Length: 138
Image 1 (cartoon, rainbow, N blue to C red):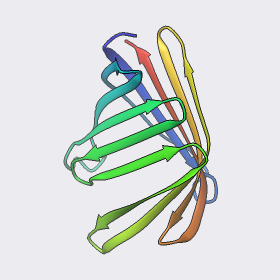
Image 2 (cartoon, rainbow, N blue to C red):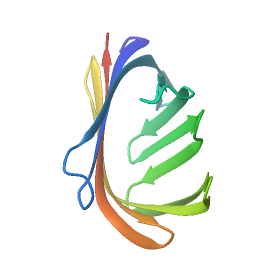
Image 3 (cartoon, rainbow, N blue to C red):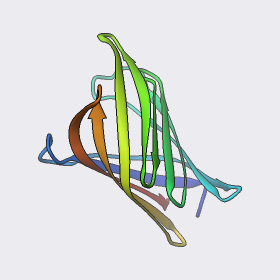
Image 4 (cartoon, rainbow, N blue to C red):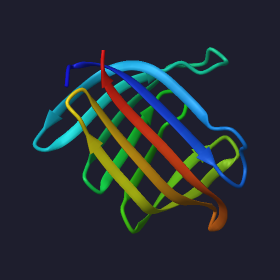
């Protein structure tokens, strides 16, 4: 895989949204000690501050760190529930993700990660969700 990559992130919340949300952008990829790393930036639709993203993943594990207008960290481990707290202008909220599916498919010029999980906010069920993360050589 090349260092310069095209990244596609799409997601769906089955109990809330009817259509997937999708982001297509460019970024940087590297492999170190058996872990995949992807760095990319997002520009919000309202022209707010740019968000820098770092994604790390390997078989059965996926994590995403966002820094910018809204800082966040999400961790997906197969068959585990992970929690984090988001600080918002309305106060902190508890986010729990219970990952029940995480597949990693590696090809010579493309990597795909598919994640299925349950989302709870402040200890209340919100939705079943899916995220599809694809990295391909440019």
